[in-house]
Length: 328
Ligand code: SAM
Ligand code: SF4
Image (tube, rainbow, N blue to C red):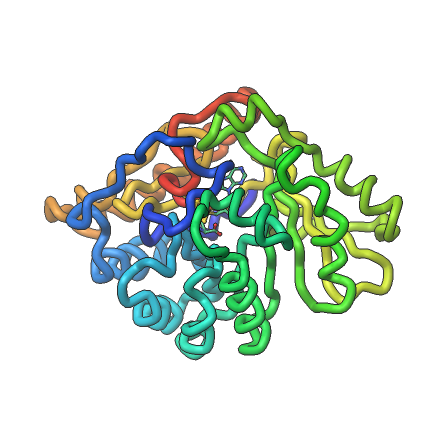
């Protein structure tokens, strides 16, 4: 059984983008009210007195868009400076990154995943639902700033949608030839926008690999790291190519993570609400952290069974909550 030591923490469910694959078209989302968000103090208490003592040592800050969280640099610094934090990373859309990349690095953040679904500003704006001035350049500036500051590894996440950005896979893969970047292709999941999923479908990682292999070649051997990505390389490239294949391949068996939503729900599985715990309400009701540790430990024990059920269910159903709400 995998050791579950990795917690993805959603700092906020709101986002300044409205990516087609992440959010439903047109419909308004029910955002978490400010007073329902975990405060910085509550979050730090949970990390220090609940999660670290039960064995979590690696934390990823996500959202919604984590850089929209007020005082995010201070929060990064507080989490990074906990003696038992072994790894602190963030997933961001990069739009607000350029001016604070150095501050985040100085605060102790070392690893960044930035979403970049297209190299074409027009396609990019279409994907993120922007009708105004193009936003692509600001994201690209954020990526360049992160590179200059020294974030390593620097990972770029691409969700591949047929008919939207699948024709750019080779260009995106080519970014790794001269740069020490890791481009990761993520299979589109039916979370967030069912219409797009049913209409356009999804592309299997194996097909993407074949297409890249035909043009650039691809190392046959791959590294299977701690995370869900299978990692390959274009021969001679500085960077790598990762493939996250949660649709074509079930990796519940090697799942090592849980998710904490911005309003304090601890969720053992992305695709399954079984067993989730409302830690914020418990904390505010005065339940002590020893009792919360106990509850989290019970949930850790249940996780293999929850994974097993999810594995049997497959990952082809549609889910009512979006990635931005769950904490992607
Ligand atoms: N806003 C940040 C960002 O976009 O990087 C962090 C939150 S976002 C929910 C985290 C990751 O989830 C992104 O890499 C995004 O591409 C991915 N994601 C969102 N909806 C998805 C879907 N339906 N299928 C696959 N990946 C999805
Ligand atoms: Fe926002 Fe990230 Fe979802 Fe795009 S994928 S809408 S940037 S939360």
